[in-house]
Length: 252
Image (cartoon, rainbow, N blue to C red; front, side):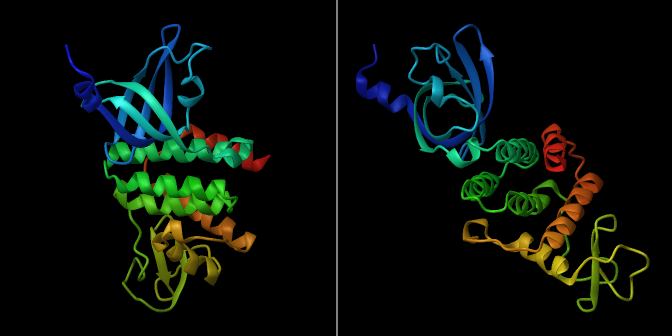
């Protein structure tokens, strides 16, 4: 029989956020947690659907906290306890922000499955915190979308013309061609504003944690969003239901 000290050693503390939950029997569920250090893991939560369970409200989608597990590598771990880090009340009280969070979560999960890099977790959590701080959700979403491109193997060249390498006289950016176009290579592509050209590069390189406020002209925001949507459709192969739903919400 194991003593208390031995049992204590079996419990592993992980930081993460619940990205999916699936019912299991009448009173239990399986959750998937994107973690800071251990990737995407599955966890059995025994009895948490019971009205008497203290963990009932702590094992729902988007719970962000420290999870105490009987951890099993490459198998379902078992949940012991949860400490919430942040509850994201601003997001959870706004149906549009919830739609953004649903999309960012599905996108992040797909990106992580293609490139199991722990940096993805940090980018995702930083973006959620900015949404919760009432920063423009479309801008934050576009920034994260751009930052995920290298992990999908379709990063952008934003230092020169995609066609000839010219670093000057950039006149526009085109999603079908895949980058900047200079005046010598320009044919009939849509001309976007100079600010759009500049800000796409800023979005690509900015540290999300460092963003404190956003004030961007609506026309520029729309041009950048159009470019990113088109680029994702053209190069990533990701067609997510949460994105379709978000687009419907934005068109209402």
